[in-house]
Structures are given as structure tokens and as C-alpha cells.
Image 1 (cartoon, helix red, strand yellow):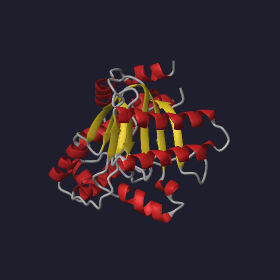
Image 2 (cartoon, rainbow, N blue to C red):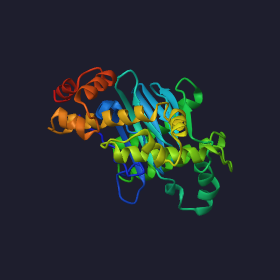
Image 3 (cartoon, rainbow, N blue to C red):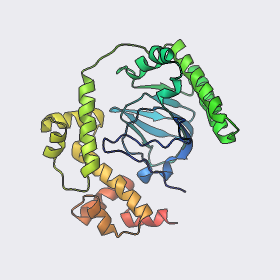
Image 4 (cartoon, rainbow, N blue to C red):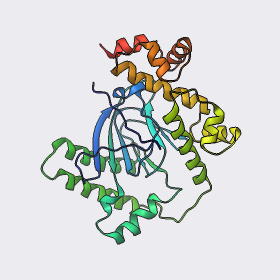
Length: 297
């Protein structure tokens, strides 16, 4: 199985690789097992994201909130939200991911300013979750299934058809008032920016011996404020988040390189191999060597 790697900029925004230059649309089915540690890294992007569960379950994180997605559930994540998906009880999940940039709606500036920009700038509109057992959830799933089938068929000009479906879906969300157009400002916005800065610092310096003081300084806040923000948005302490990211990075190195386990531990910022192994077993239920052997089979 081909490993899926999400490329991040220094501010941990995702580098989205659209299928065609000039068409800001990404449609892909994938398995969580293809991601290191069966989890994507925490990231954000200017694109609006749709997740549709084809089979299995997925846990999803958005700005400190966690949602369990079951088969045929769907989720829309608004632009510029901190988010990632990860496995439920280490089980695999087959899912559809759609990313589309708001500029897809930009052919008419009036429509963009009236129906799109106020939504993506609404701090209260972080995500929409649709349950498969509810009628509305089934309706949303039909839109996403149409897009999936269009991509699978790859007929001539399928992108235009997919964009047309996305227009219909967006219009439906507006008509049902599920997308609220509000001029909403929140004090939490500043904390979210601080969180982004601190996570960006961790992503850039995880291989070094960084302290809680340095993480807090990267957000220009005190140690206590740093811990409170991480608890709110990540439901982890800063140190736990740092170690989790180091472990995820080590999974990629174990799977895709021939580096020794000792070198990988040190390259990921762990001073002691025994501590690295202890955390790895706790998080993944096997030793680093066993993980490498499993992935090479």
C-alpha cells in the first residue's frame, strides 16, 4: 500500500496537490492504514474539506473538538480550521476526501462575496457533521457519492460535473440554513492563532531539545496559558503533543527509510532509545522494530 504523506509548510498549512494545475479541486479515496501511525498530522488549509466514510470508522479532530464518524457519515470542515483524522481503536477506514478552494465559486464576485466569503470568515462555522441515519445525512451522502463516481469514471470534463455538484451541495446547505452567514467575531480567534504559532514551532523544531518555555514563547504567552490553549484545542499537554508528533514522524522513517532505530529516535528528538521504545509501545502496541517488520511484509 502506497504511503500517504501530507506536506506541510512552516506554518503547518497543507500544501494541497490539486489534480490539475489551475483547477483547485482534490478528490481522492484513501485508507487510514496508508498514513503513518494511521493518522494525518494536525494541519489547516484555505480549502473547504469534505470527508465521507465509505467503510469503517474514523475519529476526527477540529479545533479541540473530536467527532466519531461512522460508515456513510459525512463531515464538512470550513476553511482555515485546525484539523486531522485518525484511526478509531487502531482500525482501518476507507474514506473519500474532497478539497475545493473557495475560488471555484469565484467566477462571479458578487456570488462569492454574498454566499461564500461570509461563511468561510464566520468564526462560529467550524464544521458541519451529517449522520448517516438521518434523512439529511443521506441527502448529503448522495452528493458526495456523485462526486466520487465522477472521479472514478474520469470521463472527459468530469471536473466540470464535479464542480456543478459542489455548487448544488453548497446551495442546498445555504437553503437549509446549515451554513450560517454571520458577521461573527470571537475572542477565541486570537487563541487559535496563538495555537497555530505554537504548533508551527513544534513542527519546525521537533528534532531539537525544545522546552515548554520555548513552546510558550513561540506563542508569546506564559507557560500556564500555553498549557490551557493546548488543553482546549488539542486535548493534550504541549509535551504530549510534541511527543505524539515525534512518534508519527518516526513511523514514516521506519516505514520508508533504512535508518537504524537508534538514529530514528535521535532524529525525532528522543534522547534515549529506551524512552522512545516505551512511548512507541504505549501508542502503537508494538516495538519500533515490530512496526518496521509489519510494514515490510
